[in-house]
Amino acid sequence: MQSFAVQGARRTVFGTGSSTSLPEEIKRFDARRVVVVMDPALSRTDFRDRIMAPLAEDGIEAVLFEGFESEPAPESADAGASVAREHEAELVIGVGGGSSMDVAKAVAMLARNSGPARSFIGLGLVRERPLPSIMIPTTAGTGSEVTFTAVFTMRESRSKGGINDEKMFPDTALLDPELTLGCPPHVTAYTGMDALTHAIESYTSRQANPVSDLYAMEAIRLIGENLRGAVYFGLDREVRSNMLLGSYLAGLGLAAAGVGAVHALAYPLGALFGINHGTANAVLLPYVMAYNAPGIMDRYAAIARLLGKECGGGSLRDAAFTAVDAVRELSGDIGIPATLEGLHIPVDAAPEMAVGALKVTRPMLNNPRPVGLEDAERIYRNAFGGNVHAGL
Image 1: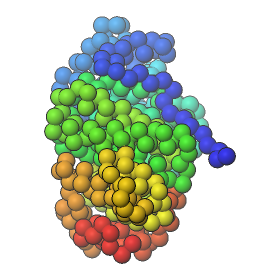
Image 2: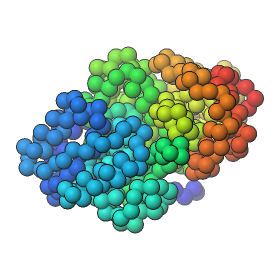
Image 3: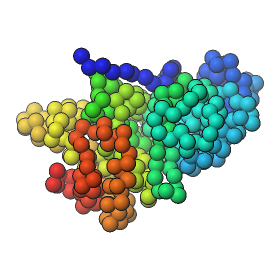
């Protein structure tokens, strides 16, 4: 019997209106002084008052930190940690998408661990347990509310890296579908494909196990059935709820089994060209699936069925590659470019990107099929030309 460990947020509250219980959740930690890390775009909307006003009414001293950007630099977390220490914060709240929650997790950690955020990039380098943290996602999404990773972009070296430590699992995840209703269609599209990538990669990873499989399979089904609706009928509460649940389950799958080559290959797109992580994953996902499929055809056939495709009449290989086509079809239906050319990335960047991707060792080693330098460059070149099934 396979051995495995499963972890995630220590407490999850899911349901419409659940975010209104934030003051009560804070009191579970006997905290009165908190830092709210909020996406700066959100802080310019009514989200700011929706989060901050109830805290003030309840006598909770909350200070807002919004000093970061999408694909944040590690110095953003350092700045947030300074705010937390000056405020003598007892708890950190992350509100927004993956960038907000990643910064919040790092701020909670740095508030109790001396040193700059850069010094913790790697695996298992955190010494002291972070401040308690509560994550409130507004996209469906990154799953960052239930993972132990905070990803940062080092712009001077044009690279990305993550702080990864089991001590950084959030204490509470508040999952309120109402908060995702205003998510714009294009953001809904690329964050939804990010969640689908988490689910597919955890289901096909070298660390996949019976529990992560349960999370991943249900996430694939929910996202496959609801992502188009969330993009084009964004005020449908049932669809939004299903997508948030799918994203959450995909995050649990990621936490339990890890991800693979899609993530490793996506990092250079963000570091070198500023492509947001969800879009990078979405564009590359079919090409990596086609590369992996010959070795795990049964799993890809299962993915095809979870995505609603009939696979009864053909071979196992046909069913496996039906999954590849189903993902590409879904991505195209919601407006994701089909190629790297569609992201305006120069084709001559493939060698540099391949070198960078191979440095993202944990996801690469977790990929079901080994990926060497030539393999990585070939996947990129196929993704430039739109040749999903070429030369694999």
